Amino acid sequence: MTDAPLPLSKYKVLDLTRARAGPTAARQLADWGADVIKIEMLGGEGGGFDGHRDSADFQNLHRNKRSLTLDLKSEEGREIFNKLAAASDVILENFRPDVKHRLGIDYETIRVLNPRIVYGSISGFGQDGPYAKRPGVDQIAQGMSGLMSVTGLPGQGPIRAGAAVGDVSAGLYLSIGILLALLERETSGKGQWVQTTLVEALIAVMDFQSALWLFEGKVPGQAGNNHPYFIPTGTFPTSDGYINIGSGTQKSWARLCIAIGADHLVERDEYRNSETRLQNRDALNAEIAAILRTKTSAEWVSALNAGGVPCGPIYKVDQTFADPQVKHLGIATAIDHPRLGKREIVGQPIRMSRTQWRLDRVTPEAGEHSTEILRDLGYTDDAIVSLRMRKVI
Image (tube, rainbow, N blue to C red; front, side, top):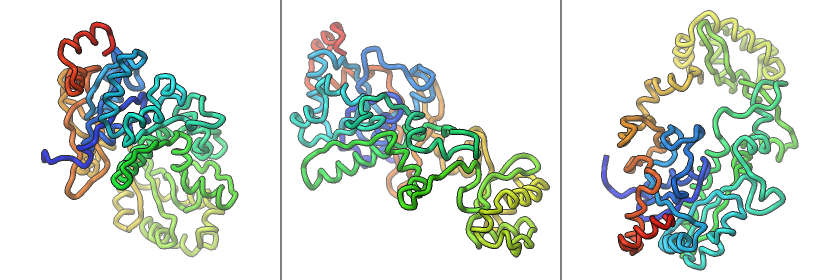
């Protein structure tokens, strides 16, 4: 691993975010070299879904950052923040829209101090509009975006996705927006306010399902493990479990029939093309399932891949990370935490031919870097001690 500067190493980021969406955006910037200062409340914050800082969730979200504890409600705390903001490139926040204005750290205020600042905001529903003041969390956005209406088995009722897709996608979209604003700043010399919302991010993630309504006026429904249009694509039982098969094109359908020894199905009128297969999906799935139950998942995955048919096993998470291809990709990243010892966290899924992200520091303790950050701003050690005694930091 090289010590060469990473792509974002010249940028300084102030991370005011909590929970998951905002920290996801900040992590993307930190992993690629930005100096991300996590601004925390005095005493730190509860960590992750299980509420403590040493949780897997918290340790995974906040690596590669420095931590400064700061009382933003105090005049001196805001003075410190303003000094940092004047010397920074990016500020990230996911407060409810009115909170930053009450604290005096909103975009309009900060850009007076630093016209080049790129100010990134994530909210549930937007910075203005009829729902702006509503609290927004991942599952609420899943429901409002339409995602829950297409997830699950037909007639089952709405089902949430099993991962925090709203938070993560909003965080990723915000990080893209931040990078676009920094790139634009190279030409204009000016920063700007970059915004996204949980509900918008999930509407975008719905992609073809959202487009189906907008473009054709059709409301998509639940299709369970079946693909709603490309048949047969879904989950099928084997003698020892289940596998996924993606065989929606005409050529792939023919390859599937050959690979499972059911050439005769290709010529059946009710399965002849994609439209007839969709109309007779349940019957077709039953015929395929009867054949697949005769062998194990591993046997079918091997045979179908050899026949050029997209397919794969259905894993639990422990099996995912034991898979040889996942191991080869190296997304499980080793850390050596000074208190928690040797662990693993989730690495970056981005690969570049010349530049590799790196883990320079594990998730910091609350306020771990307060002294060095304030020294960089010109505060003396005596002044820092005084600030600490008065609980400004």
